[in-house]
Image (cartoon, rainbow, N blue to C red; front, top):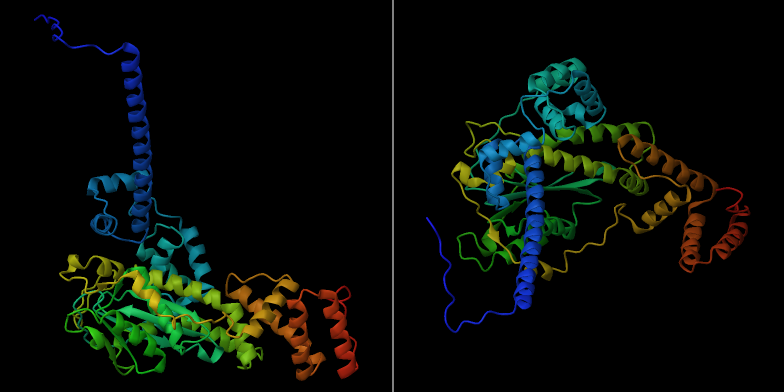
Length: 481
């Protein structure tokens, strides 16, 4: 077969070669640049999606759940085969490449030094997977835990309790909020909230108080802001600390037209009837709080904690951040562990995060209502000005001591205990030298001159005050720190 060249159409004028070539070259460069930019975007999105897949895999979700979560929460559709290939490229597998038994034993021993001594073998197995990135059989963890902590295993096997039947339509149908007061004798208060259907812990915050309505309202608004929705109903006890949160809940639901809109969206009740959060407090005690209660009780029995306001402030200053990290880790473990089905409960048994984010897999629906973020900025009363220590003056003093003596913030319960004893010793040196009224006057004078940045005049004035009031000489900074 032969081809013949067509004749040009009459009246058609060919453009100059230079202009045509420049135009084509410009279009080619533009297309090439767009293609490179698009490929970079695709590569970045693919890397972000792969990291999300690895995150869900390390949290113990099944393959089908990971596929569903990527489509539902991130808008990324991926096949089961592609998911397995991505995980294989990342070197991840559930039944291959088990970690060394010695490494697992060392990790368990490290956990048993702290609150991990209260964990059962299922929780410990999950900790090893998520916190230490170890691949291990649950049966092996059970054997090692019996070997390394026989007393704890025997103690847990004796405790049993009966749960009552609970009914819920779906996630965000009913939130249960309450306060935990077991650590209050030591100056620490915990506020928490849990979703009734999925048993997902929505917030768990440790601070100087859980009786301030503004503090509870801030926790509630932070959770609503992060989720982008408001629950259908909210249940609390009759404490005055829940008044502001109840008013905000009813305000955000007043424009809705369902049966529980407006004032019906909040429900007061007795603490014993608020069973979802009350039952979870027992789980918290067996997981973490029992360890802290015994640690603080040892400090009290050894004479290092008297229960005074000053001792509580110092203890909060040293332990608050450490306890909060333990609480965050406890929440993460709980929200990603598997709840076994119960014959006495109408809610399905599964992983709380799966029940909360994927209710369609369990024949349910999300009962929450979307909320405009601008509506959350109209509550000025939900802005408490609280220091971690709980007292502004003591907070300033402790910050000054930390900087003056070059002390480091604690990273675990052991370093926090050492810091607490050091701060107590420094404070006792001051109280043993001068009476209380002298110290109060010195504190006010010190703050006055420090605010004006008159350091040398500060020490001279303090020298005069001490000599005039108690006849003692005040040390100079260069002589004694």
